[in-house]
Amino acid sequence: MKVKEIREKNKEEVKKLLAEKRMLARKLRFDIASKQTKDHRDYREAKKNVAKLLTVLNEKKILKSVKKV
Picture: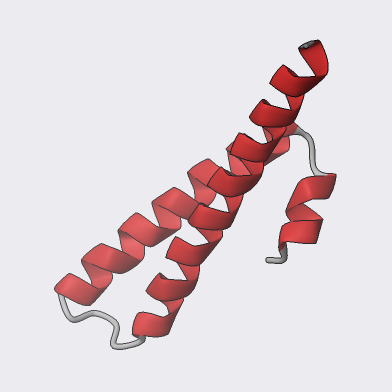
């Protein structure tokens, strides 16, 4: 998922995506720990997506506060 795509979504959609990606990352982490999957790249990608979503949420929060002032 690209940051440009995330920025086009509203805050509620981003929060929903964030919850989904966190659940996916959690599931992948447990699958790796229990040796059910060997593909660590999926987990790494899920973590990066969570970071991107959090970054965009924080950007929106900062822009909102700047516009108030």
